[in-house]
Amino acid sequence: MKFKRRKLEAVPPFVGMADIVFNLVLFFLILAKMQDETQIKWEPAQASGAKVVVKAKVSLTVDEDSKVYLNGKQVGLLNLTALVQAELGDSPPGDRAVLLKIHKDTLAATFEDLIAKVSEAGGEMVHVVEDERPQ
Image (cartoon, rainbow, N blue to C red; front, side):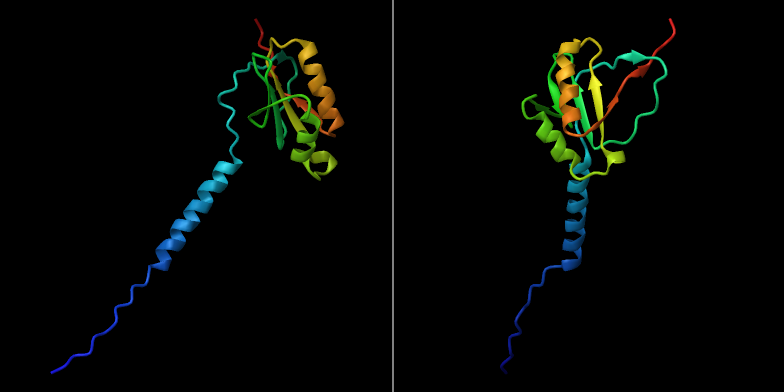
């Protein structure tokens, strides 16, 4: 007696693959939204009457060594205007806030040029400071 051989079809489980792909997409979206500024060492200046910080797309930080960081990445002052303009894109006037985080011991000569370049890019500056503590 002769038996017919059946072909074995190996079909990958597409349902499981869809779950894996979905998890990977979520993982990379979350990583893309995070800005890692943990390596930047800065202490905010103190001022009286500080207000709550608005939501902003752009963050400029000057650390204790006077290095400038744009959204956590070190940049130079030469192309800062173009970089800020690119980050702000076509945002409406009320949504063009740029957070300025300047170390408390930074000299004015260091960050005055930074402020001028943000103004040239059309950003609305928001200085990040701590509320002054009574002594």
